[in-house]
Image (tube, rainbow over all chains, first blue to last red):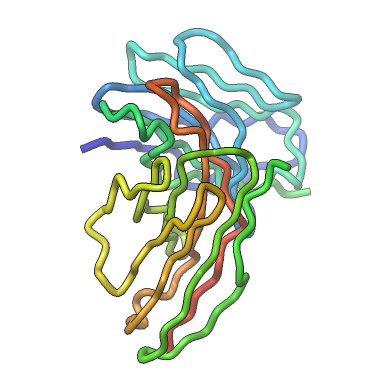
Length: 115
Length: 115
């Protein structure tokens, strides 16, 4: 059974701080690891990682995957109050070529950024 | 159009009622998903449709009945639900891929309360 573990479960920082969120996984036939941000309703897609060692970057957010050690990190620099959300990590695995989007989610990290 | 639209946004139903949740996307995605999310928990996969055929049922009780009438629409028919079924129901879509990992785009969800 696929398993995704995120840490820490919650984090409180002040604006301007840098945070690192962790995601470790065990999955059969790994395909990809995804990061989502969830505020009030739907998760919104941040990154999809498939290859080790290649950093994905979007503004103040960046992420990298280590397929040997089976983990990923999500970095947020110069945090703002608008970054407060639950950050979800999900992995896609399995043999079924028709279900590439099926994801197993971790429990999420709740980030609170104080002014 | 990169949206997944879910209706209704909120639904309150009694345990003897029959209701349906609807999901629509016009991104040409051929994989669609229903997830259930309880408070402070990650989304849990319920059903996957691939090319309008049900490909995964994650042992969901029969009081939940999915339907995919065409490639843009996904319904979830509800009957004789229990109060513990109250949750946020999320629809997602993605390219099913042929072994190529793809990200899922989520709708805003239907907040369901069973009374």
